Image (cartoon, rainbow, N blue to C red; front, side, top):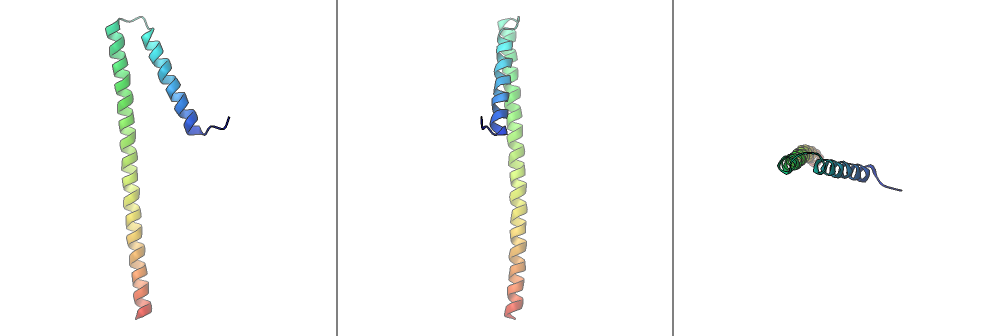
Length: 87
């Protein structure tokens, strides 16, 4: 089998989630408690996904800002070199 680690991790996480859901559904709790637990689990997963997405956005923004500064610096250096050659 030729899966990369991201696919393997995704399948593992999905399996853990399904296992947890099945465990919750068959746990000896009332329907109301079970539904509350499911809602809490889903909300926790959603919150984690949103936080991870925000981290990715923040890192991407920082990278773009850094690259923009590098391009501006390189452009300024090239302009100065061209100016010294022409003079």
